[in-house]
Length: 254
Length: 250
Image 1 (tube, chains in turn blue, orange):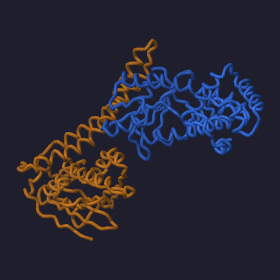
Image 2 (cartoon, rainbow over the protein chains, first blue to last red; image 1 turned 180 degrees about the vertical axis):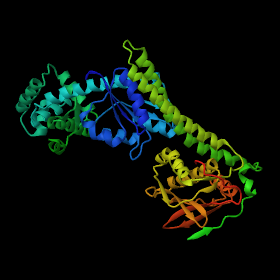
Image 3 (spheres, chains in turn purple, yellow; image 1 turned 120 degrees about the vertical axis):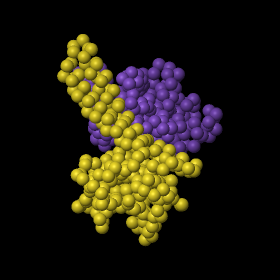
Image 4 (cartoon, rainbow over the protein chains, first blue to last red; image 1 turned 90 degrees about the vertical axis):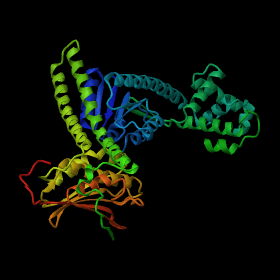
């Protein structure tokens, strides 16, 4: 078994289910880890990057839906397939609301299981690509000083250098210097690229930490500043006009 | 503390087998059976899933480019164990479906109580309630019918779970207590859920339990206390003037 094979975790308090499903998945070439309680999984989850979690809904102490919420609270995002022996309407609605890839009603067939896991692995690949892309963006943004991050956010919001200078209490010439450094440090060839860069940071603002290959990265301060500055500007000038902007909002962000 | 004395059952000792005559009586067995079947069905789905996965794994191990005989054998052995689980669950389901005169055997109520708690375990989880069994030995044999007693205990515990799920005091377990009291075996269920208005032991929810207890010559009563909760007490005779021969497995 190779480490590059997708890892599937199974969380079910019925040992017979854990054993049988894991046997089948190992036979199909997956790496598998089984857990008989949600706590047992949570204790090890920091060191794992599963491509799919197969979670039973009814378990003692913490049910499957609550477990998925705890996983998310830990900063992890795992494509999840729920298993249930009771497919009533509230259970189905609860699973879908939590963003499950699929809900397998016990008993399920090998084909149903395989299809759900394939979908989960495809989702995991997309999520992994997005995380790595965002990680790259954070790394380059981490090179910016707080002042440069501030200028980056304001310039990308469409403000001319003169307005930015007035807002942050400096000269237009200084803003131009900061702007040049921002473009250089971020390896940006055009203003359009800079705008797309900042838009990506805003779109992924819900991420404050990233876990890639069991390595955790916290969002750098410069990214926090860019997000806050652009958010403050969007709130104060929703039409993108040139109404007075509260400098205190910007100062507070930096 | 209040104690509701139980009025005699309408149909006397064969109450469990009488033919329903009113709309309520016709609906009652369906309501009770529906709840019991839901609990048992969950117990069928679990081993059935494990069985299907084990057979699929065995086929995979046998049909791959390199046959994995050990893996296939492990899967098939496990499949057999799951088949046993299925057989037991089906047997329990069969017993629930049978309506007949009670048998007359000396049986132990404790393993029946234990079986029932295992059977409703998943239902308790779904209702975020916990279960508890207290046995105060020595507990002598009951002169009765094990499958019917199981039905009665199931009915009592499921009713208590349903009441508990309506209560803010779900931290308190539904407790099944078995002890010997004055020539009878007392099997009581305690819960801290609300006692539903107009539903004593004569109500819809507990009619099945009542009919079985009465058919055994026993008694059933409901006690209520603000601190001790609602307690449904059944007492089962330990002796019979007729042929109490041998002790069968419950």
